Length: 69
Image (cartoon, rainbow, N blue to C red):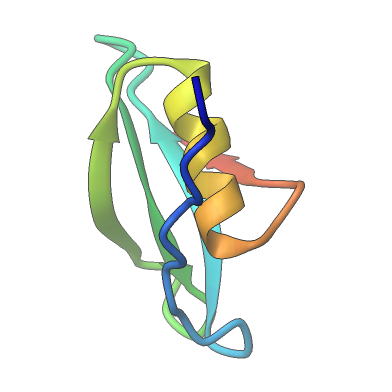
């Protein structure tokens, strides 16, 4: 089995921060970006597992990710 290369997601790190939004009611998780000027969360993709969050982190090139509720 070969590992496929993660497709890079382009974003502006001076204006956006990668984040995971978690629902405290349902546990639903969405990865996306927080606009640093407004604090608004911009949805990118619904995820269902930590491995999908890890894949998103590889795609944006970070080893830390912020969680918002």
